[in-house]
Length: 72
Image (cartoon, rainbow, N blue to C red):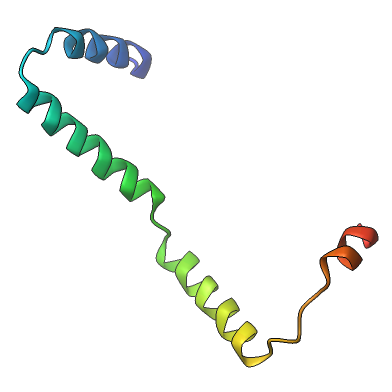
């Protein structure tokens, strides 16, 4: 069964749910999955840490946005 069909079938099941406890549980699962998607990877965190350290070490070593915008 393809993903589109599975989603459709799942939606049909959701419509028939009568117990709020089931909906609460499903909402928690979806919220947890969304939070996982929103998290950054260790590699991304490492890169951000490197850039932040570079900025803290040299706060005046930055580019002016107007100059960059005009050059591109």
